[in-house]
Length: 625
Image 1 (cartoon, rainbow, N blue to C red):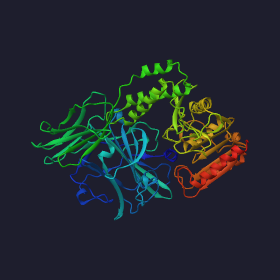
Image 2 (cartoon, rainbow, N blue to C red):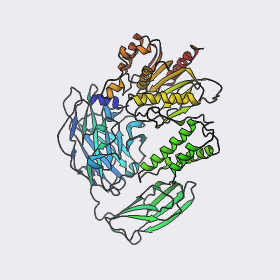
Image 3 (tube, rainbow, N blue to C red):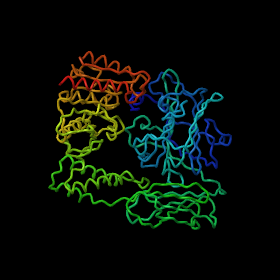
Image 4 (cartoon, helix red, strand yellow):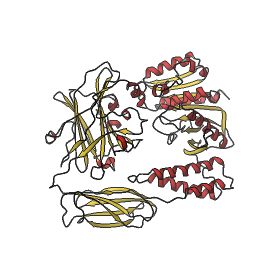
């Protein structure tokens, strides 16, 4: 949801028209002390300047002098940013609102654009446990939002009229990126500097819309080169050349040697299966590997379908551990024909769900790069294989599912298979009618896992449509049609009380709920908006879309129960917008229940708010009894 504010801010920028030249990253043979200040031994590192300055629409034009330095060794990449400011500002999401930074590390692509990258976010904080202090935010256009391991560090410090920001990033945290195994690497660095009075300026190595807009799939980068270690350095590094194999394939290991090989030099490889049983144990001589060559060694083993752990060790160096998967060879077309032609009594909804899963598995296998294990694909196949066996025995694989699970329908819009997630009440009984809660997901994600926690009081059937939308605020016609189609599919296969359906959503889904109700007010008894923006589509997209601050779009809400939750410290959506929306909703005659919670950010509701929301749901149901 970051892009709400930043897309609005990105209205004015200036930059020097400088084509970035490759930056040569210095080799260091030690681990720096990460305390926010350069070690004495790092003072000689070349100083690099940012090529882009962004003033956005700020009235402040002065620039702070900002520079950076880069270095690396066999295990880590090092980065130091220095700003001519004697104070560090600690803001949530400092990489957006200052002080903080983003580092993009990329595998180069055609025409200076790449879709293979890591986007690393650093938000300095006085709280050492602050989640966004250092995290891996995006990987290959997938929002993953996971922390670094303990072997990566970052720290900041103000000293002698300057501010220093250090990061030491383990190559193992951003596998497979390593200069000794990659043909080339690229980067971009963005630094956000807080000025005053909520004003932030930005600095970047290259201009890249993806810094602010999470919808951008291909990122811009500048080239990196890496200084070779001195000739007297003796280093060996090995990793898996491929982390997913087919049955019968050998285990491929890439080995790089820096310096002269000694007669005793060897690496030790151990392979264990998912049960911890030893499958392979080998000592491999390195005599025929010479600098600067990289060699791939192929090790035969009994490569059956399953998950494996590979351990590689050189001399007294630490063991490197890799996950590897042998994937099945699946005859997808044959399976599809088998399901479509079956004469058993399994419902159309369950058939569509199995077909969709096969489609997803096939797509994932086709898109799987060599450096990913595909463990998730294997698990998905195992589950689907089990469901196929049940189907072939005339049993509905999903008949007893109560936990959240993904289903699929055939779209009326274009006849494609489209997913939604369903959660049934724990004691669901098909002979009883249940109210339906439709809940929409936020930006940058799909609907999976959205219903892992109940979004109602446990008395509702809950459905989370995907809506073919991650970044478009449910503005497309197909998104609105998919929401309705998902509801119709649930109604066709489960016992839904059509007179008691409610629509809600979080963040982008909050705007989506308003939009879905506006399009079909006849379907829903109420609307719930959690940390939602009333005019999101117009803020993000070109065109004219419903603005729920405008009475023109609020007429449909007359006498409709609307629940609104928002935090006063929401950094993505100003609470002032929500307060204005509440006034306009009441002016339109909506029956509004509002919870503006002091100190909360862009997060789901607190426990007290949730109880009031559950009470609101119960009151809507009671009004129809």
